[in-house]
Image (cartoon, rainbow, N blue to C red; front, side, top):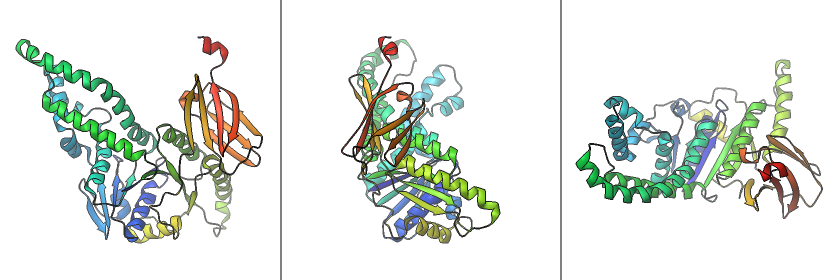
Length: 394
């Protein structure tokens, strides 16, 4: 099963791009489902029909779904949620408030991920398209399996053994709620599901993230940060969709400054995201709502290309730790052993190799560190970061 996630800053048009991609995939014969992980759903508006928590057929081979967190919670998290609510109620919180608060942080992300896992198990779909929430929420979504895996792998085995010993004693002395075998069974099942979804989404042959941008400074910078953290968590981006480019045929003087600005930031997109393919999409003449306009957008994005294909193999960048230092590896497949020039700021790095220029937004762990070495080997630029000697002694 192929999984494609679309993310980007709010308002860049990622819902339209995701919907257009899903429609094109379905028209090519793939059994396709598109689901929205954004609380403020807009898939219904894009397809111009009402979608809900259960998949609804939109056209031949195409289904849509707007996930409702509370219905999903009852299906996947009900047993654990009841225990948390009981514990909060025992601490004096009202039953209704306790039930609401029992929806713990991260549960919305988990519910969305579990649907992807379920569709893989069922085998009824060839392609899952995910219309993600804006960038910040999407990073919470994609970092959730890593965080949950870390927590559960350390806490779960110990807590289960302790509970089995303590439960009989506690029940005779007090009315404190103690997790039951049913609760631990639900946690164990959930642990397995998280492992499966983590494996699926980090498999570059099955899952890809596509970044949707507009040629505007703030949008591009946020997308660069997004790409950095996607690579940090092990996810693979395979394309950037540059949306709403004013066509050349628009010659009105009113748009002259806009076109000049877009050309400048389109160049920045090329430099900042290479070697990822950049898919340009013109500003459409009408609002992209309904199947005819979505079909038109899909043709503009992909032409005759299969939208479900992996458009770029591998990762654009990754970070490794070595002898107390960090190595930032950047894919530069068309560059030899030319001289490398770096301009290192606190939050970003400007790289010049021959005529090749690249701007990289640094993740938090590299900010404030010094660059001590940069070298090219087999199409990969390796940049070594380390703390200065004063900080290292501390």
